[in-house]
Length: 121
Image (tube, rainbow, N blue to C red):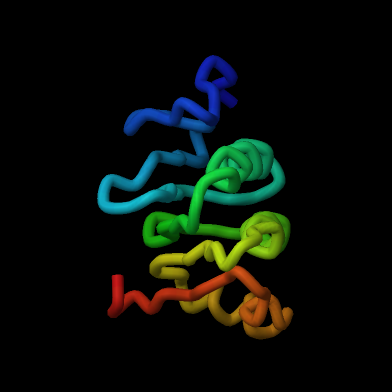
């Protein structure tokens, strides 16, 4: 993991590690996640989500995510559940597998979580 980057200072080229890349979105407040989200890359995600939680609503673009284990999914849902005051975490372009896991676990109904269809991206 590249520990020289601080999460609060994400730049467009910030690489959390070789398997996961987290960059700020250009079009709105949020993050783009590319690569594999699993136990080895979970800390980078939780730190990035924590840096976003102090602001308003934000988006996490999952269109570049090729793998997500249940721990990664739990981190996203936990971040959404921790938002207060009507703030929302929008998951943009979740894969059919991620959407299915959210539905099977019931986590798609988490307060503060919004799933945006690929067609609405």
